[in-house]
Structures are given as structure tokens and as C-alpha cells.
Image (cartoon, rainbow, N blue to C red; front, top):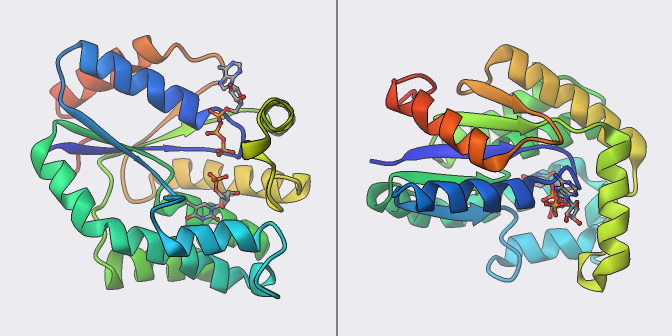
Length: 221
Ligand SMILES: Nc1ncnc2c1ncn2[C@@H]1O[C@H](COP(=O)(O)OP(=O)(O)OP(=O)(O)O)[C@@H](O)[C@H]1O
Ligand SMILES: Cc1cn([C@H]2C[C@H](O)[C@@H](COP(=O)(O)O)O2)c(=O)[nH]c1=O
């Protein structure tokens, strides 16, 4: 049974870039690694509806905090069997965003914290009712809000396919989301957490995590 590792952080933090670096390093070291990114755009109707809603479509869907959270959660529910199979067939399964994203953004949109009712509702729906696998380790890529926003803007300028959605344009939401993530780390929400900075070397981090896992730290299963 493989270990489930999640990369979390603000929009534009660099999660996709770091995830690719970690996966490459682990594969080079001989680990069997699978990876998934949530939302699963192009594969999940729920993910696509969510992305479209954040770009002004589907009436008032985006204004419903709970409705948006359910779309992202249903995407993961549909991926649950695939995720369990990937865990059975690999040493490491790396996820770019997972349930903690839903907790952080949903609580932040409602001006709540990581112990508030929205966080508890997301936890109960996704891990309780949907039975999603619990991560062994969650990694917060902690990048100053201004730097993450600049990276998202630069990416949009370079690639029209990566236009910023409503959450990415909302600096106050990003600030509050970062605060909820900090609380999740402090609480060790659902698993041990590690925090990585904006200039983290993926190869070094991959080695650190695999050593830690080898010594049984950060593994809850
Ligand atoms: N360590 C880094 N140094 C400089 N630029 C970076 C770094 N990491 C990522 N970037 C750049 O920042 C932008 C955002 O990175 P990336 O797409 O990896 O972020 P993300 O956290 O996955 O974003 P989102 O959640 O919005 O999809 C990209 O243009 C990427 O090339
Ligand atoms: C998976 C997930 C995402 N979100 C938020 C985070 C982003 O602002 C948008 C879209 O995600 P992307 O990584 O920028 O493509 O949705 C969320 O609120 N809940 C989730 O579960």
C-alpha cells in the first residue's frame, strides 16, 4: 500500500511546479509514483462546472459557497476508486490539492477558521460520507500572498489557457485562505503536515520526505 501525500497552498503558489519536481525526483530514486491534480478539469463534469462558474457561467452558482464546495467534493468522490487503485499499485501517490483545499477556501469564503462549522462539514462529507482516503502527509507550500498573486498574473500573461478565476482575483480571499491553511498545519489536521517555502528545492524535499517515510514519521496508515 502506497503513501498518500498532498501538496496544498494558495493559487499561484507553485504547487504544480513543485509536484512535478517531487514526482521526477522520486521516480529517479526508483519509487513507483502516481499523481493526480484536483480539480480534475477535462475529466470530471463537476470540476468543469466549478471552473466555468468561477468564470461567470451557470447563474449564481459561484455565489453559493456550499454549492461550490460540493462540486469540488463530488469530483473527488468520483475519483475515489481510482485513488484507491493508485495507492494499491504504487509506493507514493502525490495529489496537487485535496480535501484541505476545500476546507481552506470554504472556511475563508465564510470568514470562518479551521475549527468552524464549514471545515467540519467538509471533513464529514468528504472523509465521512464519501469515505475518501486520509492523507499520510500534507505539505503546505507557503508563499506570501503577493508573490503567489504575481505568479498567477505572470502565468496568465504567458498562457491564455491559465486565465485567473474569481478566487484568484480576490486578494482578501487569498489572505484569509492562507490563514486557514496556517491553522490546519498547527492543528495537524487529518495528518502530519510539513511547510515548504517559495524557494524550496524539490529534489532536497523529495529526499527529506522519503527519508521521513522510511523512518515511519508522517505515516498514519
Ligand atoms: N519556485 C518558483 N520560482 C519561480 N516561479 C515559479 C516557481 N514555482 C512556480 N513558478 C511559476 O509560478 C506560476 C504558478 O505556478 P504553478 O502553476 O505551479 O502554481 P499552482 O500553485 O499550481 O497554481 P494554481 O493553484 O493556481 O493552479 C507558473 O507560471 C510557474 O512557472
Ligand atoms: C480542489 C479545490 C479547489 N478549490 C479552489 C481553489 C482554486 O481557487 C479554485 C480552482 O482550483 P485551481 O487549483 O486554481 O485550479 O478552487 C476549492 O475551493 N476547493 C477544492 O476542493
